[in-house]
Image 1 (cartoon, helix red, strand yellow):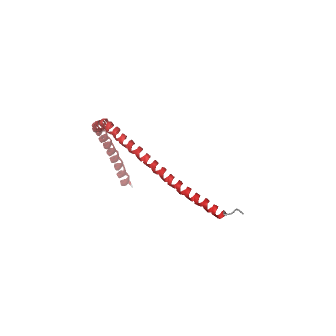
Image 2 (cartoon, one colour):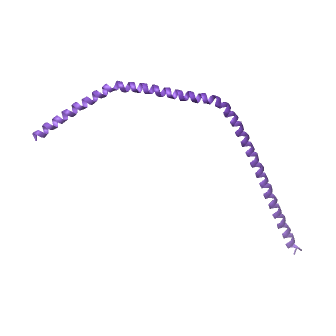
Length: 118
């Protein structure tokens, strides 16, 4: 039997515990450094994007206003032609309604003749 085996085993377990604690501390420090790196990277990216968007916004704002004006003009043009088409089709619609009325009167008179004959 190996002398002082229990002390050797205890020293081995103690060393493993210390190594595990040191490894966990190193892991936490590396994670903190990685988090700080990414926070710095994203803050720099956001600051750069803010500068880019402020530069681009000088061109986007007039474009946006021009698109609004173009949309308003398009709506006015569509309404102009839609009203014209409605006014042009009004006599056609009235003629169709009058034809339906004539047919309905003819059917009603035919039904009255059938009702009086029965």
